[in-house]
Length: 143
Image (cartoon, rainbow, N blue to C red):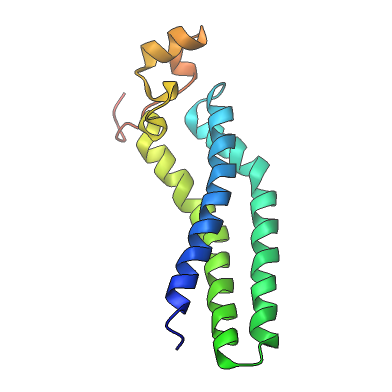
């Protein structure tokens, strides 16, 4: 095993994750200005899902080609591990974990921005009813 593989895997996964996360969270934030958080998440994922999936599949395919055409064991190992990390990030992290964390955090997901302020402050800034914009995460069964 090449000792650099965990380091390179971390670098590729973090770089890819931050790019996709910026794309997804920016869209969620845009949608959250006019829709409740759950609806904003659904709309954002439906709009960015094709782009993120396509980019992830292309990048994973590129590293799979490196793994198949690699002329030594280290190149093959690097190609397969990064391709697996890209697929995992594309289909699991961006599709399930990030939206789930956003729903669980509710308005606290947007912490330093105006979207994280209590609903009265958000309503006064937006000029509308705060309940129509951001709903903080509440436990099940709570009104």
